[in-house]
Length: 572
Picture 1 (tube, one colour):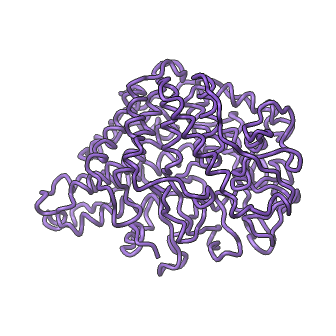
Picture 2 (cartoon, rainbow, N blue to C red):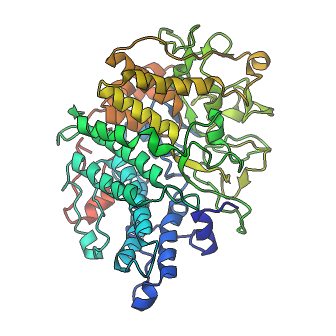
């Protein structure tokens, strides 16, 4: 059992929480006197509750990893048994038929605001305490503001125009008076940054319990927020990127300074980031991660059930596996390299394993027919129904970053399949790529940006512990080399964006990257056309600019707001 903040939640029985109300307030009303409320032990329970909800409130259909919503990108097909299996996500995948009343539009909104309300409940009491009564008060406030920022960040990437619950002293009636358009896009990002800047100034360099964010986690999240903020989308009638803000980019550079991450770095092997074994979890690259566990005194432990739908359906082994979130052919093609070990961009046809070279990260990200599933030779993937519940509609590739070896004692059967594998929210490779992108957009430090990319490529080259026999045993050809030339700003930006895609593939960043770059409509409509032959469902797909970049505000929320919420643009 891990010594984590989530383990404390289990001990206190806080992992099973209700998610049915718009605001889920765990602070009892009228049951405790003021002395009890301000008791540090009680406050710690509120803090632990605010952490616990990030595990207990997520669902296989509403994963806080956002994989369910990344099916809109060119990285992945929805998967499952067909278009009617999770039909509301099929609508997202093809950008057609998305309804403001769809349960998946409303469910994530509700779950994330419940999580924010937990942080606010803890903050409300922490604000009332004197520092002399609770020595950790300032640090705990920083942790809660970090969690509140995390919730608002996820909401803003999904819905853009959201109400901000950044005043923990609001009454229920005041919550109901919040508006979702009082701040423009730029101001909304700054509200999130304000919470994170407080966290950065008040969090410790090292936390004694994994799962609590440290100062470097706040720095990494600040970099992420300012990178999104830099791509201004403040035209009220569109989602276009109207400008790229230099001051915001400079803050990205500031908060990705390697000196802030002296305790972190790259794993020696890329695959180590996606392993459930205790010796690999919370490794040097993991800046902040959701902590899951097993064998901790509960029936199924504090397992990661959020990936439960992604497990393939292997007869007699993973019966009930649903085979969702399948890597796309387009993603697989993006890993192809040429004889020089650089990205192959000239090929007109699809990647062919025994003919083409590929970046080794392909075989650590995508399960390929003809190779072992989760590196276990007992399960050789092929083009059969075992590896595609849709009988090929969504292809035969399988996600590897979300799954574990069926024979490795880390696959747990409950209502769905789960595992104790952590989910990294912020990893150092992401920080490096954000720094590279900001440097290139500033048109300064392009050599440093290319050096960052090369460090990831060099790491990929040596990430072969699990796939060392793939070339001679399975005929897979691998080749990757660093960039050696001098590059213009435009060339360097393309290099960084391409590297970001293959490094972060299937980690639910891709769709949101395309939106913040202002490239979603162009890239995805081209993807739909190219993929129609590989995946027939895309024959009717069409991405509408200035609409499909963001989810609509849920109908139930607009209806209940008494006119305080305005619907996103796009004629939903």
